[in-house]
Length: 200
Image 1 (cartoon, rainbow, N blue to C red):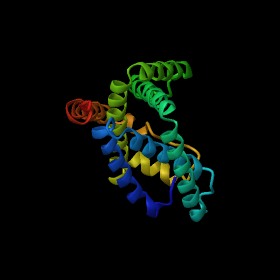
Image 2 (tube, rainbow, N blue to C red):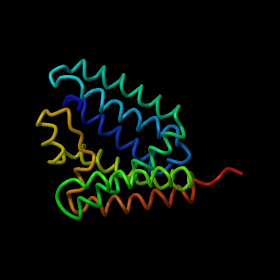
Image 3 (tube, rainbow, N blue to C red):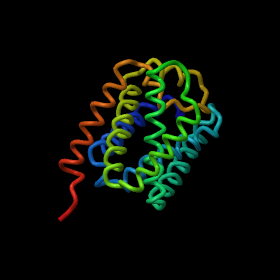
């Protein structure tokens, strides 16, 4: 978690990265891998620093982000498998949050992650399009909620607990899964119709 002064610009960058992923993820897959690798690396590295160490958090976020981006970009096929696994885990969490309170059982998350990874390897083009569209849509929603001061996100930020990440917390609001599905389908359609076409 970054200091408060940096949260608005970072949220805007998250929305922009989500839009790139949602509407041009197949064409720019290596860039999308770099964006998500950077975000993941930055979140993990900055969470190792103390809340009061602003400089340390920023340096750790940049170093971890660069490391994460390089890791996913150079590990292209691993990245494809991770995208499929991540999509499977996201589907498990969103579906479970609508079914009832609490987290989904680990077995469900693991099984859907494995199925997503296997599917991603066999149907790379289509899985990349769907995964980047829906992953980008979710990223845009989370970033948009952060920009508009979502109460759940604000509560998590004010708690000062940098050890816990809440990428699926917005799913608790009833309209968010519907918006995610609609935006993901639009992104999938755009990519299949325009940006996902094979070059002649």
